[in-house]
Picture 1 (cartoon, rainbow, N blue to C red):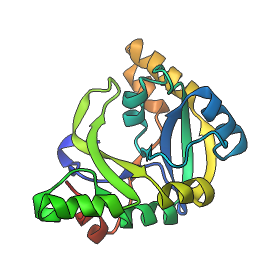
Picture 2 (cartoon, rainbow, N blue to C red; picture 1 turned 90 degrees about the vertical axis):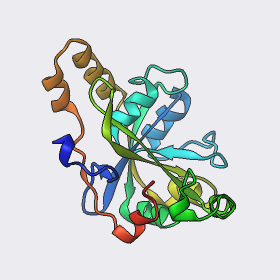
Picture 3 (cartoon, one colour; picture 1 turned 180 degrees about the horizontal axis):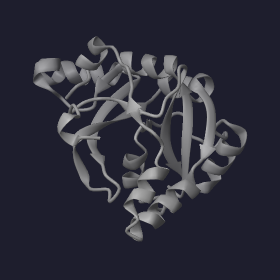
Picture 4 (cartoon, one colour; picture 1 turned 180 degrees about the vertical axis):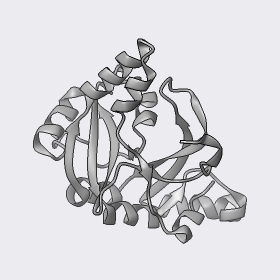
Amino acid sequence: MNDQNEPRFRVRARHTASTLTVYQAYRPEIGGPAARDGRFPSTWKRERMTWIKPSFLWMMYRCGWGTKEGQETVLAIEISREGFHWALRNACLSHHVPALHGDRAAWQRQLRQAPARVQWDPERDLRLDPLPYRSLQLGLAGEAAARYADEWIVGIEDVTPLAAEVHRRVRAGELDAAAGLLPEERPYPVDDEVLARLRA
């Protein structure tokens, strides 16, 4: 991918005609049962905000290739496109942008009411260094978190071994081999009027 041609804000994901894949990392007591049963166990706290990330390498940056405490099990979670679009349509940017929100109080009201929030963080390369374009993170709370857990999830896969193998190749300097193992993340179609409200 030519970094120069990549727009600053674009959703990139592994996706099919009906689903896209997001990543999360949990302690094994949560991640293990989730991967086994295809749904989160009862110990998963649905009242807390949960962040889903379509970027595998951003997840690797966040969880340290599955080595950070409490993030040892990396999950690839396939969700419905309808659910993802619902979250985007009902999301608010996680920080105040005057051109989008007007005054700060108006943005804070919107943020309190929104069941989802969007954050854009620098995408990462194989060495987990920042790239010049951004990767979407989607925070789900309240109704969005419940819909995610109960309606949107199509399948859950434990990809911790993949994370470990890619990391091993990177450490060995085998960057081409490591890149060949990465999930294929392509531009994901989102209505521009939806993205226009969410670009920072």
